Length: 101
Image (tube, rainbow, N blue to C red):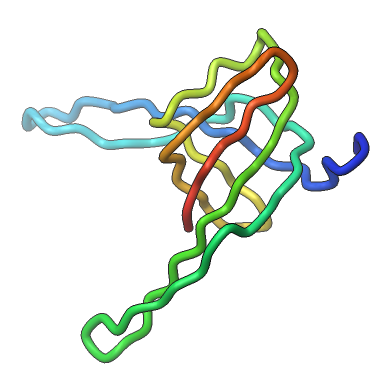
């Protein structure tokens, strides 16, 4: 753990495996485990067919390391939950990742 970065997250990279019928299967493999800062930005819910669906927008901040090539196709796994990336902002020393679950 480094300073405010107290969440140990897994970055996952997507890959598509072709099947024999012209389609494909999306799977994810581990890209890296990193310490991150996590901040919830917003929370909303909606009724979907008599059920409730929750949306949480989260900002993760990690150190900018040259060995990590993260894209918006990647996802984050933390505490048995998946966060889908929709924005990545990089500067010299950190990467801010906006994601939702």
